[in-house]
Image (cartoon, rainbow, N blue to C red; front, side, top):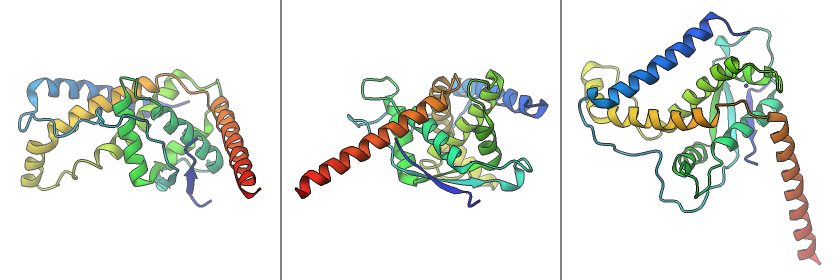
Length: 233
């Protein structure tokens, strides 16, 4: 298994998972309180990932997907790379499906922008295992919630890390970073995660959407072939 694939633009949890979910909820609440006036430093929003100057929807390019965190994955649980490819594509398409008339258009466009710019996304193997193991129509709301929260966190960092420099580890450097970027970081954290959590509130119908994508691909290929034949004639 290569642990690498390309997404075409057209993943019984126990106490540990419960603690992870609880921590996520606490972090969300903390972010809200911080934004209410406890951040300090520069309270000017340097950029807003919910805004865009685009007037037309940007197509999502093909995204290369890599597996990471192999040593932290479940043992003896293989990842079906083709299935992973299809389900990642469904998820990314869903999160970037907003058009110009949608109030979430800006957020959707900024997710497309960073994905197209980077051209790849690293998925922890453990998360990929969870996605591939999900049964159609049989995934519990709790299991889906834990999975989607982890995916949301991953995608948020992908987006924000493209705009904000890494936080230094030394005391002086981290203090300067906090003063300059912390407000913008947490403001965008709340906005992006709220949008993605709303979009992924319910488990997606992967099978139905994959069939639709396959039909669209066949139709597009047939149309292209027809145009090429006509041009030759």
